[in-house]
Image (cartoon, rainbow, N blue to C red; front, side, top):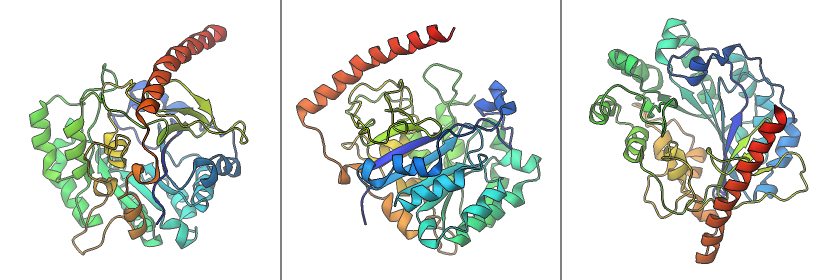
Length: 364
């Protein structure tokens, strides 16, 4: 099996949603009234922009919207063309847009085995809106079609009284407990844990799910990364609507890879110039190996579960693919290459900031 060449984190420019979770920043900022975006580029164009040849190999592509990822009608066609390129794709979804799943499960079986849906388990909202049956019906639908799935919950304080009830539902519907992420408070500097409990209490409450995702994510949450990081080369952050690329989340736009398909894509690691207070999505980035010297579990452990009947959430193809690290398909930089890339991001960060300021001034 070909190894992971790059991890592409795709932002789907949609803010509206079918749910109104209180811990979601879309709820907090009142963006639900926004209309669905009209994506600037066709699925065929996006497929060429992210072709196996242009990316240098097979990529692991993650798709996530600010609101519900699958609301834009263009998404199934985009997912299919990227699967046809040979890439492995994960889609974050709240599991309520049944018509999108109905369309996607008609894809050929060989494509669906490379597709995983990461179902966000918004328990209180699903219960309030009487969408629980639809949610789990859609999970069974994609599983029976040959896709992988993973189930995770955002551990909000308001959900604590329902933990036992939620566990029972998970075991009954998907044969295993859901994974647990770590919620962050984006209204505060440094994105601390979103809870009124102490870190020790928070761990004690949510550790009962025995989720490797929670264990690893909490173990590194709040730690400033000072190692050499290959984000920008082995991984990058892409706006699926515009083609704008950032090396990682908290960076200014470094290039556009959709406008001119003949222009080579620049892959340069950020090195030791991390702009984040901590790697808040370390459960994906670090387990895939953007910092190769760190000893982390493989991403497959973070996503998979073994069910009571012996089944697993991930297909064998998906499980094998994300068990590998990015370093297996990429070249480690020399000493001087590391010095150069770190300096370039330090320098270009300032240049990008000035360009951003000038652009804002022209818009006024």
